[in-house]
Length: 184
Image (cartoon, rainbow, N blue to C red):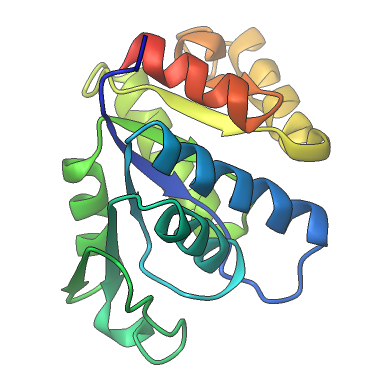
């Protein structure tokens, strides 16, 4: 049975200096999104993991919505083959638009910007302001330290809800999409 098409927001790095293993996972995700007829919502860049996931989705004939703030248009080189490019005034508007367009959120490994985006969704889920699933794709155990830290925060009562109710830690892109398709 073909899953119902979802609009899936992918948070990830725009860094150009990452291990090829991360690029492979990003390409795998983009390909699977296209194959399963999901729309990719992402940060609009053509470099790093952002570019990788977008190019793979495009090669597979997928729908792509890139949302990029005008200050990053020249820095991250907007992915021109996107089905739609939305240029925002700033990062806050970018995040708001990405959230508004999405049925679910996936996070590939990323830096501080990715963490900010993840924490925004965690906060919204923790406050019951969204029911859209958040999945961290745990490539090579990348998110293990964050998961341990958040588990500790819950154990010590800084985070009220159990963290497994706030996000799902997936070992790979296949499990991430399986989870989203079952919960979005």
